[in-house]
Image 1 (cartoon, rainbow, N blue to C red):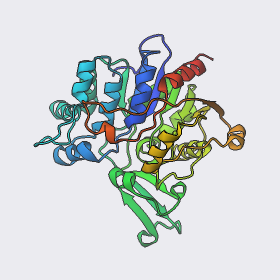
Image 2 (cartoon, one colour; image 1 turned 135 degrees about the vertical axis):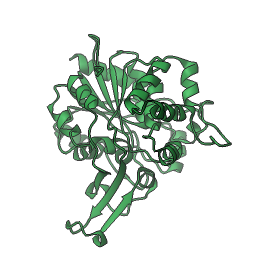
Image 3 (cartoon, rainbow, N blue to C red; image 1 turned 90 degrees about the horizontal axis):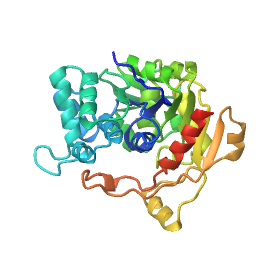
Length: 343
């Protein structure tokens, strides 16, 4: 089995999925070639959901995003991101179809990801967090007795992602059905890394499905790597409304089964009023830095102006322009991460 890291450079493992991992990986690859992207595998919406249901394939979407982020070949990147607008393949990205085809051809999703990485000429490695066919579940058990009629249960990443929670998500249990087996390569990457980065992303549908896999939390507490959480810039309407920076960090650790963070990197700058107005229209609010709680935390809080440019449309992906506007300045964050790694 191939090792996650091969050269004598700073070794970085990035945990997450979707846009947050994409942007972090795109910046970090400028500083080191030794990157292992550990990717959530609970997605069941959009093109990924159709391929899972119709082909019995493992979810390719977040894996595709991470592969593209680690590639320096613009034309092949755009090819993988290209999304068909109509016809039989309407809504599918070419990279998703290719990954599912490679999985069916080889019978091994790990091998499919490795082959796609060779096509893209990636720096580093992309590691599916689990190779099990799992679905996400979120539940509130008010009496603690597990009785179905006394609980609220949400099934599936797509459903949870769009839900406006009636109750505090910090009192919910997030789980995978069936219970997932952690990919051994993910354990190796966490144990061998110099730095483990928890990328920004939706807590309950992007980061949580990975952190709750049995063995991830223990590996994070056991590794000698420096563990850094890059806090979300904004809250998610109907889910993390009012979450401060320390609230985000606390929930990340709860899902992983206990304290493990060494650093939390967060933005303390405010976007221009016109940008805030546009984002308010989407229901998003900036995550407020709660200095008293951050100063008292067991981790070191690192602040800065980490606001990036507004997200722009990409001709290769017809959905990019429909996603949230505010982005991290991941170039600046990558420099902070590498500085921490060198300490």
